[in-house]
Amino acid sequence: MEIINVCILDPIRDFHVEFKKHFSKYFGSLGYEILVNCVTNERDLNKLVKSNTTDIVIADLSLGSESFSGLLVVQELKTKYPDIFCIGMSKHEVSYRQTAQKMPTFDMFIDKTVFFGEDKIYLENISGEFLRKFKRNTHLECCQSAKWDTF
Picture (cartoon, rainbow, N blue to C red):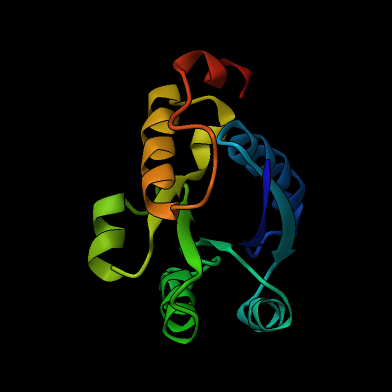
């Protein structure tokens, strides 16, 4: 498995352990082992990105506010580091269409609730999208639906 560095930006520190577990399993099913760092704010994210090789940033879209400040954080990050793959994450606060309109620099979007068993077909669809867009070596093309029964 290829190792990739992932940074999760979410203001709620209590979610970090769950996100690490779910994203490790998700990316593992796609042929990647991930090294995960979690941060709660833009300042820590920028320090982390400057200090190591970050391949993927997964950012909460709202960052705990109504103004969707996570969108702005990623927009600034993509301006400085255009090669970082950015995934927007939300829990029904905003749709993918709204995200794409407000922030075309996100590479893809994941609804947080999918990791808690709400929609297995959605996971299959975003897996194919991720593999097409991320363009890193892996031996998998897409996951079979049976794999998602373990989430």
